[in-house]
Image 1 (spheres, chains in turn yellow, red):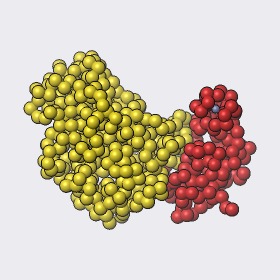
Image 2 (cartoon, helix red, strand yellow):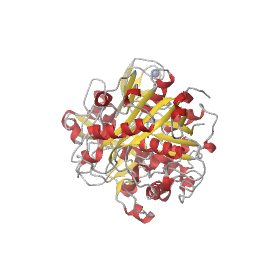
Image 3 (cartoon, rainbow over the protein chains, first blue to last red):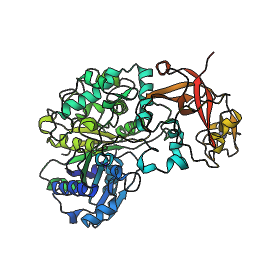
Image 4 (cartoon, helix red, strand yellow):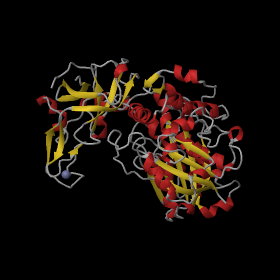
Length: 401
Length: 140
Ligand SMILES: [Zn+2]
């Protein structure tokens, strides 16, 4: 138990238009979400003295990275006491975690945090590219690939779809997990998206639809993979003292999980059925008196559906290897179930906002602003997790009192 | 050990360096090699300048049996590189050390017969400066 996290709140949230091929620039979308978040926090741009993002510019295609922090700082003419952007760390949510640390350390009072993607516009009408064969890596095919990807790309394992498919296959083998159980993640997401006016895919999906979707990399069907979109999500992390100035409930930061104890590799990690989520998830509970039974809603990363199962186990909502039976039939993780999961529709049906959609939704639920998809009763505690494979980060958020 | 005909139309090659060359060219002698600590016997993969097990720095590429078992796999259907023929990506664990694994491809095996636990042995696909270690079913 520590009180460090509780020095911070999430005081405001904002989201730009989200959709397929919006044809708008990343900075344009970012300004939209940032202004919304700052206004929601009851602040002016002049109050913002910290800025954080994931992953920062220059580390991949612009559709993936969004604008870097210097571009956003300049566009909004922010005066910053602290700023940070980067790809390495506890997954996408590391940007929020970094902001909490900056506020806790007294380096900043109000940190604007954002994640912007324009992957749908960048992709255009073509298919999703794998690493090493995409337009952004034109030199790789001739010069060769170095670094960690040299151990997968030469074997045509181009995508996280391939790497995580092997993780899922191992889970199937060790624990008897079935394709029908896996399907529940996508089906649950689609059902929830039907109640979210901002989701991109809202038509009902049946188990037969799921199985009819084409195979990408066994056991992953197309509907196990998230849907690239354009959109920006922003939030403001503030000192806890700001809570009383808000016209809505503040979201409290209760605990964070950032640990990585296994080998940071997609294929050398000791336990392929869980990987880094195991470490970040376990660490999270060492920093709070709350337990998994206290969690009212869980927004668990689903870049590939299997990752939500990994997080259910890693965060202790079910036993190791038991996520298949836990989600069987979908009732337990439904909006009206004992642990509603990915209440906005996840990245499958609400779009690949790359972890920040989950963070945003956790705040929406804690504030009671979910509309048709609001979880019943009082939502006091939300778990949110990002990442997969050797990359993982998690936070426990509360309705601030 | 055998060399095989090019299994795929296209492979992105590794960028060879002093650190990784011994691995990617080991097929030239028909043997799969990993860097091995001479003090404690630990195999280092990927290659690294210091043994993480004992701190030893006398590290030498050494051949292994080339046999292993499929720790996990996936049959890929997505045409990432323009080729839409399904193929098997496998994660092979070597018997020489727990957790010593290679991502690779299983060749010469019907895709519906790939399964976890399948015994396999290395074969090399030679292209340019590189011998890609692939695997085939290890028939008894
Ligand atoms: Zn050693």
